[in-house]
Image (cartoon, rainbow, N blue to C red; front, side, top):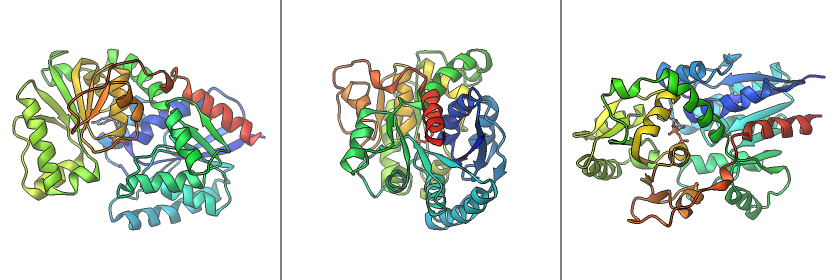
Amino acid sequence: MTKRVLTVVGARPQFIKAAAVSRAFGRVQGLNEVMVHTGQHFDAGMSDIFFDELEIPKPAHNLDIHGGSHGEMTGRMLAGLEHVMQDERADLVLIYGDTNSTLAAALAAAKLNIPVAHVEAGLRSFNRAMPEEINRVVADHVSSLLFCPTIAAVDNLSNEGITSGVHNVGDVMFDSTLFAIEKAKQHSDILQTLALTPGSYALATIHRAENTDSADHLSAVLDWLKAEAGRRPVVWPLHPRTRAAADRFGLDFDGILLCDPVGYLDMNRLLSGATDVFTDSGGLQKEAYFHRKPCVTLRDETEWVETVQNGWNRLWQNPDYLPRKDIAEYGDGRAADRIVAEIDRYLA
Ligand code: UDP
């Protein structure tokens, strides 16, 4: 009998990860994926473009929930997702990463006794002030299948007593990067649009609450990036949250080459031509490595410890990189197939 897997996505990094797994669902019989978009990221540049470029099936449901406080947003999603899970008679709920959409879907499914599968399980910053950390910890503790991208993630789960249902499958974002790199060769003209020469610019993204919620933090980040922009152009596709924060605090971006958020093909084209990457995004730290570009993480900790241990990434207060080595454990670009195979086995 065909089993129904309800995939819940809501934010940009989740569209990117779900794209690879959706394609893998298309390669097996007996599993029917129903895609639900919570609406957390909702506009053309933060949502629609990823569905188009990455060939993600159009969501069967869009809850159109965004804005408000964390609790309010999560609560509305929880109520909305509960109805969808019941109406769709989901056999399993598939969630990604660490956003409010992840948390709401995990709780809604757990309360309905529907098994939860979590992609990117076991990541930890050990900083509970980060909203993402709370979301990850709760999601992992109610999940039956935990798909870890790294050995460090498996160890983190084990330290919290979670050993059953844990699968180290590699990083599904690597699958998506490989797909996008190929497609970007044909479809991205971002370098011409921004008048950039490959090898002559650095790429920056900043959007985390810890950097945007405080004027002091954002000002320190801007000063650091402006100093870098004195050495070569720094291109920054600006997240709406960061733009709003800078406006609120009266901070400027002088000397930095800003653009609107870009799609995943343009992002991969920008990465392939960059000299360095400066970011507070989890995804970008790994993508920098996938493109073999050195990264500086503008945070005080990182979940992606292997990027630092292997010399491709450093935290901004540490001046030096460790000696540089390849990172084997992000996998071979087939993480999505492993995830779908394990879900199939679990539901059989
Ligand atoms: N990204 C993108 N366009 C942009 C900025 C980021 O496609 O303008 C991609 C980026 O390559 C990465 C993902 O979005 O794959 C990261 O999302 P975000 O920084 O929002 O979240 P995080 O990785 O911190 O969870």
